[in-house]
Length: 332
Image 1 (tube, helix red, strand yellow):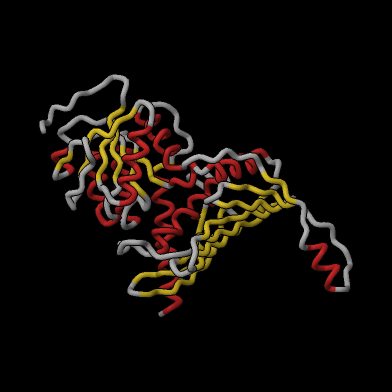
Image 2 (image 1 turned 90 degrees about the horizontal axis):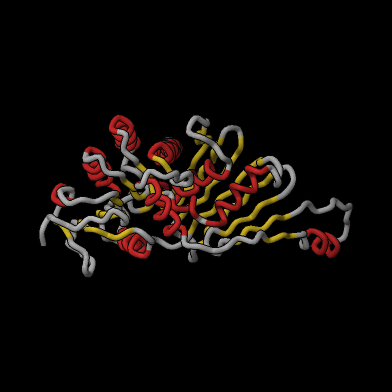
């Protein structure tokens, strides 16, 4: 293998750091993306991809030309690796969470701004068609004014030893989606109003977070204990209820039920158990593939409005740290 890798004016060359579960998924979607190829990989454990050059270190890999780099290494290494990439002037997509701490994430954002380098965070649910449909529905005003949100992302521990707790692994998704579907920009005030977590094996494996998102309340339930994976959220507005399944990508609008004065249980159960539901026509698609397409657009200098920025990633980490601090204070 040599450092002189052939370049192409029409193909964006992507490097991938980390070949764990997410790194291999990124490799798959970029390999399948039009106008892209996986140029090289780096993996601390020595894993490789068939037919793709590999390097022992990021510093060594940076000597070979790429147009963008995906960082999918363990979270503890995100800050150091992304810093090298940014200082090399290469657009960078870092898996969530952006860094191990808010301080590290803030440093990455500042460096990227100083050097005018694209820094994106892998908040992939923004590319879930059901999430996009909900965002568009709320933005248009057709569903009314949002009043509250409820998120439930629970079930089954990781298949590998986690390097972060359930807050950094799961809650960051819904904290970002909450801001995204509400259309809140980087200046919007989002704060953790309350949190409680249940630690096990020195990591929080279950938590409930209450969020004030620019005056709109949200609750986020996460755990690794429910015996099946559930990925749902709902938005209550002043006109309807929007129910979303992240996994099936189904979006349903529940209309108001007429209030009746019912005394017997049978009539009550029959009336309030049969609401009017409207299912939106949402074409299914793999969110990670959509994110890859968006990152490629950003690499080429084209608009990529759905792509989560470094600031988006930093905001999610700050909220997670606030929730963890409140939980530790409550448990002390």
